[in-house]
Length: 264
Ligand code: NAD
Image 1 (tube, protein in one colour):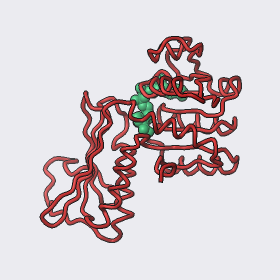
Image 2: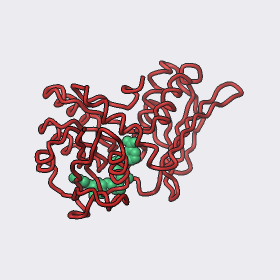
Image 3: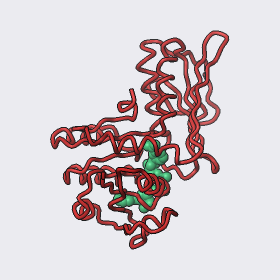
Image 4: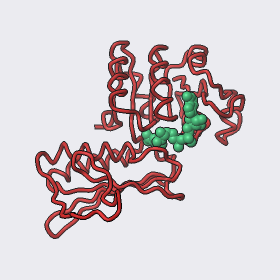
């Protein structure tokens, strides 16, 4: 039985993780950590009835008392960095979906995990369909190098653009080599109208109530376009990837970045 501590357990994703882990054979919710809802039962808060696991704020104590094997973190970028450090120091494997962690912090966490020999998974998108979308975008970029990314999320998301959009742009850039796309825009009449740029690839972020997590990558060629689109229509879409991460992290000895590393 894999013992899992969920950090951010009271949040939107954390509650989904509590539900998913508690219904998956071979794993159990051993602890729940959040800054809010302290003293509440994590299962009740997640809408599945009491699990006998109370939400607490003190991560290190929870990791030690529960003898957890895996910590699943969906919190905020600044909180996650310290949580991951604490987990590694306690020899608990982090499986992290929190986005917005700066690249230099990720590098440092990778180094720490190698030094301690503790495995982990940090993935900006745990939806398997989104990983496939990024993979297909990489293939398309070899033949259609002109591309722009449009990502659409619910209006409570605190970072923009999404981690998935940044990763997608990196993949497109790596696959299209030296080819660049021509942009005839000479006058930008409204700041930001052409989006943000990563490696010369435009990323546009849309935030609206009603959305969950969506992305469209549009490639343009001579007389044709190709659109690759993925829609997460509920947060459940991330759970098969998280469960896969919890199972596979048991065999890792350092942090791997991206769910693709576990699939392909
Ligand atoms: P949310 O605001 O609903 O939940 C975050 C929770 O973390 C809150 O309950 C908050 O109290 C808690 N928290 C903050 N600091 C903490 C700390 N130090 N220790 C413990 N808990 C702490 O947010 P959400 O919608 O659940 O998203 C959480 C993160 O997951 C975001 O970074 C989001 O971008 C990311 N996300 C990733 C994926 C993916 O597939 N990788 C999918 C969806 C969301």
